[in-house]
Image (cartoon, rainbow, N blue to C red; front, side, top):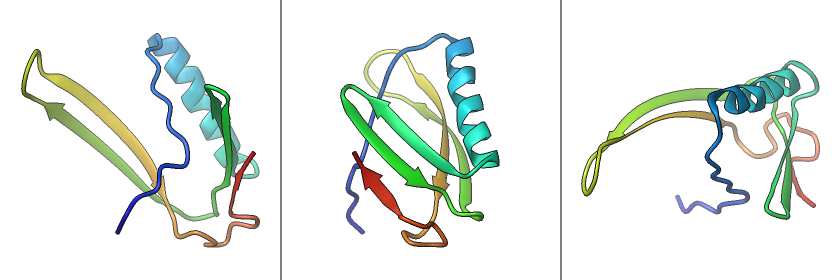
Length: 90
């Protein structure tokens, strides 16, 4: 299935700044479930339904240069899956 990137941001931050962003996401999920992502002049609002698939993945990327480790957190749901309004791009 083809993928369409609706929003993407990659910024090097300190651990405490990353934790602050993750807390903000957690607070929104505990609240109305509406997430607004913004950066670089772009903004995207998504309504996360009451139930979604939560994936956690740890990876090691090898190749040229030193190995790179990563942890990815992903929320996934079908568009229109109980989310009023779906996805809005402002």
